[in-house]
Length: 215
Image (tube, helix red, strand yellow):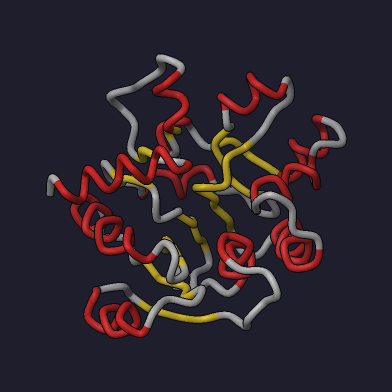
């Protein structure tokens, strides 16, 4: 299969999944696949009729949640894959993001709020694109299984932070519109061109609950 998006979650975050998929399908016809990180039986039954192009699982790991993400990407059925977190509000056609994928690299948006606050470049792992299966993805999956830190994004950052050339070797930048972060809004930065509104953190999930409630 040539191109496709994937997402995944476990029972703790499955409550966002129907909302996520509805927004995705409203604007996109590119195939989208789901990786089961350990959803409930009720959610499994819903997945049978939800409209994902495929549903797959990966072997259990001693860590869970988002640490499954790089392994899920490795098992993607697509030649070109873009991962989307389920706390992303899809606002438009995302197919243009495939134009930025490069062999042997991860395509990601710079996490501008973290970069500014930490004084070094960070990339946000809510949207990650790959062409083929880059070595950096294999290593990221291994580190998430064997050396988990605060989150998958932090694991990757430790792998590429040694110098700017290392980051440039393994990561290529996606335009900000493909992963607009909640904290950017707090910092006074918004864009009418944004295609993914990423509601990160606890406060972001409260915004999603409001969006779901208001239909």
